Image (cartoon, rainbow, N blue to C red; front, side, top):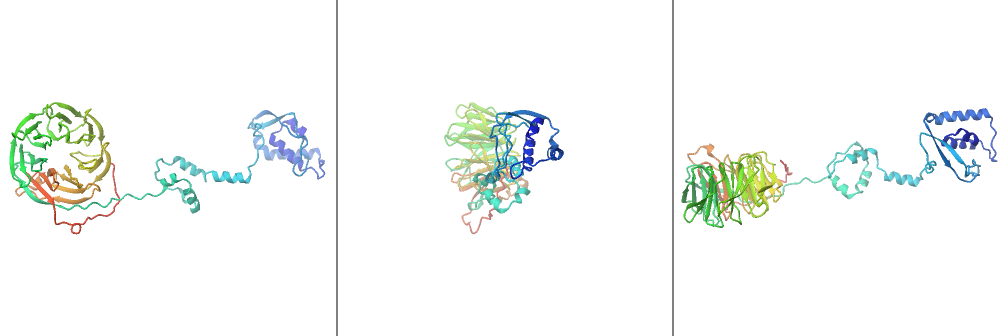
Length: 506
């Protein structure tokens, strides 16, 4: 039989199958049972057709192998095996796949090896595919049918696997707003009149003895802070005065207006001693640097300008905004200049280079007000869509203060964390800076004889002691507020609930 296999170059598997078939006809004494030639051929034809029919049509590839082994090998039952062709070159007919010396003999794995392999492999191909397509960064993925159908034991076993993966899958508690600090409510106690037009700007001098206002009647007035009486009127602007500020480094008052002029007033002589020329349109706001003699102004010509106070030279022209620049603020730390514009953006500037450091585009409408916190390294911006809080130096977004649905003209904050926003419709909201809780809303009545449409707040400021709040309004008055001394947490409780914070990026 072996000679017949070698003669016809039968497949290796056929060779082994024939050997097993031959063993079936070996008697107990080791001698083969005689078979007639016809029956033997018939059995072989049936076996080839049934077991190897699907691969007999495939192309053949010939390889030579040399097998070495004992000539007379016997199996575990003592039966005689086929003699191996020691030292002879045996030609195997391989159908479809070329076998090598390492792979021509295949062995089944042991039971222990099979169990370890099953544990190491994933539970299903679907889970492998899901892991490949899972989003990065620990995002939540809704469980599929295969995940939901797992038993609890398997789930706990998987959860015990890797702590890094488990932390991403665990349900996170929604952030809640912490309980806000209690602030006493503010009440109106004085109304000061004297201007003949809208009061557009206000500032308190560093000594806390008087304050100054600028108006649409083209005058600048200085008032006694304690009594509210008029001390002095300054004339010189030929259009609405839009900004005033008092220097803490020198006895100077700076003003700007819609007549494109920026003036420096010497308060010892009550006269203008310097003009700063350069803006091409109305100047909407100004601020002084706290540590160096630098003045910054912003204008409707879409630029902000940096001036040397003493030489009147224009140090830098800050260009980049595409619409009127409505507000500007300075600070000693970087970034030293912050501007808000009608193009809906806020820009943080490099004072030395005169270039933009960061542009914040989160607002959807005009930014008319910016305020810096006196103690924290943060600031807030006001727009009709929202009041937003930011963190220096890169302008990282902190939170939205929603609810003041009006055109916000002014913002101010004290060191106690009371943020005040004044709007075009005459409403004033007071907020807790840390949590964004709106603890009071004020809408003061207009001056007798004024129209209700003249209810509007253009500017507001705390005095240096932070015990009084002053507002400049469209009814031609200045209103003074102070804290209600009779209020307590029992009479004015905080109506706060630990609601889930909804912080929108835009």
